[in-house]
Amino acid sequence: MSSLSIAGRRAVLADLVPGALVRDILLVAGGAGLTGLAAQIAVPVPGSPVPMTGQTFAALLVGAALGWRRGAASMLLYLLVGAAGVPWFQHGTAGMAGASAGYIVGFVLAGALVGALAGRGGDRTPLRTAGTMVLGNLAIYVVGVSWLMAATGMGLGTALDKGVAPFLIGDAVKIVLAAALLPAAWALANRREH
Image 1 (cartoon, one colour):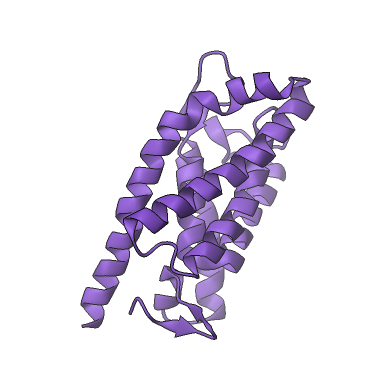
Image 2 (image 1 turned 120 degrees about the vertical axis):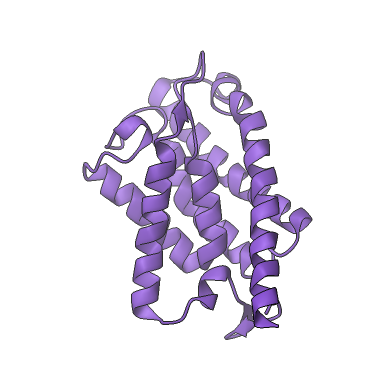
C-alpha cells in the first residue's frame, strides 16, 4: 500500500478511506474539529503572549493525513470558523485579534506544505516524517512570528525569544510523536493490505 499512487502521486492516509466528495468534506471538517479540540490543551508560557497548545500537533497531523488540498482546506476551515466566532481556539476563544493569531494563519500554510510532502512519501518513515514536521513547524513559526511582531511591535530578536524559543522542546516532542504515529499508521495499513 505504501507504493499506492493516485493520479501520479503517492497516496496519503485519507486516500485509503473509501468515497470521494462526502469523504473529503467529512475529513476536512473532522480535521478542523480535531484541531479545535487540541487547542483546548493549552498551557500559558511565562513571558510569552502565545500559549503552548496541541493545535500545532493536530494541524501537522491533519496536513500529513489529508494531503495538501484537504489539509489546507481543513486548516482554512478551522481559521474561518474560529474567526467567525466559534470558540474553538485556545482556551475556548475566537476571533483573529491578538498576538497568537498568526500561528493559526500559519496552520493553513503548514497544512498545505506537510500534506504536499506526505504526498511525496514524507510520512512513511520516522526520519522523513520528522523532517516533514520540522518544515511544517518552520512554516507556522514564519507566519506566527511575523504576526507577533506586527501585533506587538516587537523586534525580530524579541519575537523569536518569546514566540519560538519557549516552544522548541514541546514542538520537538510533538515531532517525535508524529514520527512514530504516521509511519506506524502506514505499517498498519500495509499489514491490512497483505
